[in-house]
Image 1 (cartoon, one colour):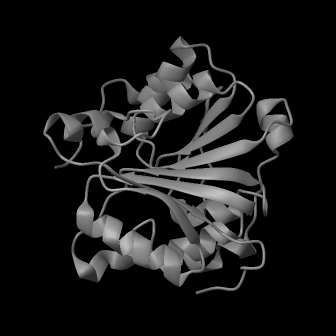
Image 2 (cartoon, one colour):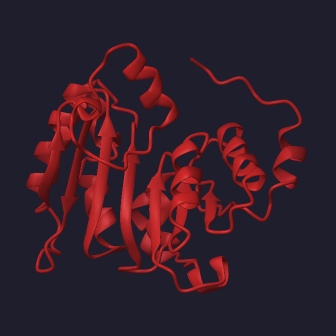
Length: 230
């Protein structure tokens, strides 16, 4: 379904500029992102040296804002390519007076242009698009194409946390992480009926759980010695 353009979008974005980062390398071929680097200075961006976490495809920011509120000792970058969506996340953060979250308007393919090497403490992939057709498997955020990209900016031992309602996408992710040298743990086939504590429920998660759908979750770590591409 095509998203309806929000009224007064530009004016609303202007009101939350302190939260919004709008890099524009989208004309760059994603295979050449490392050739045009415009690396973020996290110390300047957040005004502190706290560890930085990343969420890709954060939508309206429910997870990002709750994580930031619960973890003032950490910073969070949320990435979302659709401005009609990201504006709501920025407005929520502003209403909550959060100082440790920023929102990046760009596609995930271009993140290596902006994020310094081995600088991210952890990565969240919450209800990413499953791209169910096999011909689009390369677009999935847990495909080897993306996992190799993440290796460039994740710290040694950093954790990738994935949640999804899509069983086939989850199975694909398990295989992809293993293929690319990640060590899997905390695998849940029904998160809401498990003993996992500290879960932040996202907007999509609440919707799917209300329909009685199981929520799948995993954690993936890259051992220090693993750096080559898969």
